[in-house]
Image (cartoon, rainbow, N blue to C red; front, top):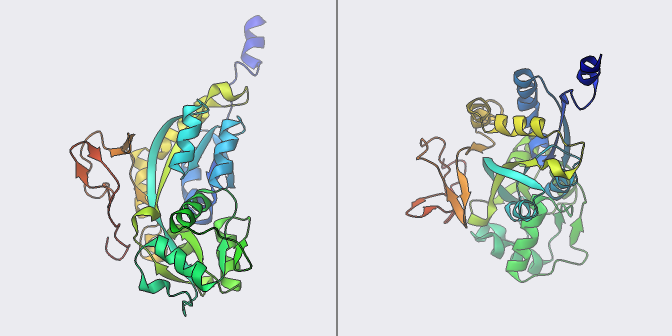
Length: 303
């Protein structure tokens, strides 16, 4: 009887639901629609997805309200790792952000090659700019670019949507304004938009997506085993193969580049061994002390 009671108790039963907190770009692009069913089939877990800004996704993991996090804000991720709230960060993939806006380009953004200078042109011209304003990875990058440009964005020309990337693109389109978007979401929405890519390929615009496991100490509801299972799945050969080709059939190009196996090391990145050319990310040249992100990244047309 005692053994039967233990077997039926919550402590003895392995939780079957895994909660993933992730950035909206992985949801809006459709990538999770492909990966989630595959994970559930392979693992036997049921995955529940919470798609929010990266900042909120990381907070959910740190509070024990999510078991695993897929995000793209390395500095913010490092903060939660230092606090012991999130563990075992592993790179999954990357894409890049692009500056998009009206084809007539009233700010003259096409004339420059650096994102910081493009931001200065928007501010000087008073052209409308729509920000996500949601503490997401994209919003964090945007704020960094404004700071580097020496601009405090405010006034009638600057609009904060407080929404995800897809909704922000739609608002920028309706208001005939500029915005900063990850490329994957822009491509997923571009057929319904008049916005054009006006600047791409600058070094600061690289988005590194990592998977992080919630610490079991974050609370009794954390499914540590399930979180680890999903994290391991995302860096598996099977998931990386899906990521490598995702988007090709619909858009003629991949929306993300898989980079599992490359590890954070100090200020840069280093692979445990030399990866094959199709996995090694453009923009991470080999150096004696590892791999570091430097220089301009190629546009998708150049890859």
